[in-house]
Image 1 (cartoon, rainbow, N blue to C red):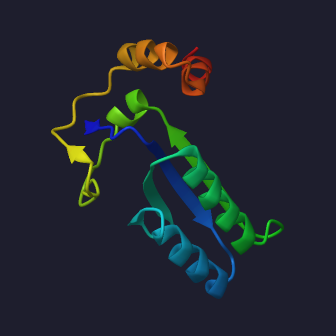
Image 2 (cartoon, helix red, strand yellow; image 1 turned 180 degrees about the horizontal axis):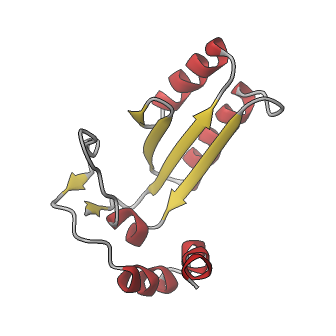
Length: 129
């Protein structure tokens, strides 16, 4: 389980075809978060303005006709379900506390997401229906 810090927890995954552009994107994403896989970053953004600033930098870096970037905003309940397997380890940074992960509880996640009016609950319900 990961304790939220009150910001926006964001995961960015990308597939950029040109090496130079891929390196530039990675450098820009490092300004906002930590690399957790070769083309995946986790970010604990402090405000919606910081989130928009990150998106603007991504848009200015990629070629929308060739590259693919996915940005996932996770609510606190979804963030708590983070599970790292193998040599993957949660990134430790100021304000982020990692404790022993619990088994994923779908019903608990649905309850918390619905309380937060999170769009993830609708996607999860459709996927499990």
